[in-house]
Length: 370
View 1 (cartoon, rainbow, N blue to C red):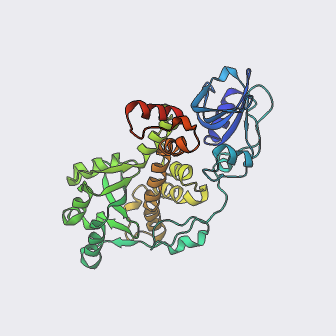
View 2 (view 1 turned 90 degrees about the vertical axis):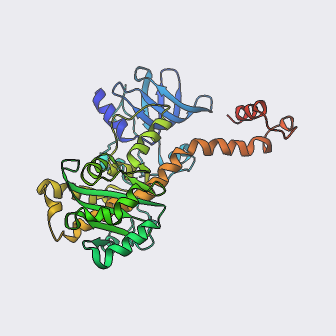
């Protein structure tokens, strides 16, 4: 197999448990990073020759790797410590760096998850990932006039401590045109028709909540939205949790400071962190197709219900995605606290003594944990 095929295969199995054979030993771990020279980075590394686990992450250079094998399902569970669900049924296969060919793999099958019922945190949003027909029950509120709907929507949003935000338009930036602004809370999805409502929608309440430093706004890639709102409407976004930036930070944390080759799309983040299958994020492909067929599609009124659902779905998963990213980024702290809990309980009685906590005793406890 040529090096480019090896590189492609390894990228397809990022985040999965692998066994690597070196010229000087055999190791197991979770594949976190691979570069063009086929050097790879593993976390949760275990030396299979000695049976000892190695803390942190470890890099293995391409020239010393003889073979890489994808572990089977049960071994995946063991390697991950049963912390995350298995994405799919795995078949053992090597990269064939020096011998053999990899098991047949396709990008779609490598990211697929087993069907499971995962309901969003939105109590009034009846969308279940396990059953496609439930998508027909997607509930959203279109705000296209100031009477009746706008006032209650703003009163609801003002009471929130966090909400998700997305936007659609044509060439969305300071020179483009904003057509839709989507806001999702834990129980509602609002689709604001900016094209019809005009700038008044911000002066009548949206600007206040978007600039409120006490309300967290969750956005995936806030750059174009921020540029448009600032230059066209005078809205300065504040207190933003950007899931794209969080994904980069998470990657850097688990790889010991490495940065990804590129930033991740919303589709990739949903599949990676929320374990959504390609079928469940297909609404993003529908959006892309609609824009390619008609770049001005967001000007169409009335907008077809299928595209209104796309607008709603673009924001529905932002709040759960934020929570998952926070959990993943805090995993190092959680591990350290677990060790701290066990430091006295499972340690030697010699560690017991004065309950006074000083720098020296704290350092010794941290050292004991690690």
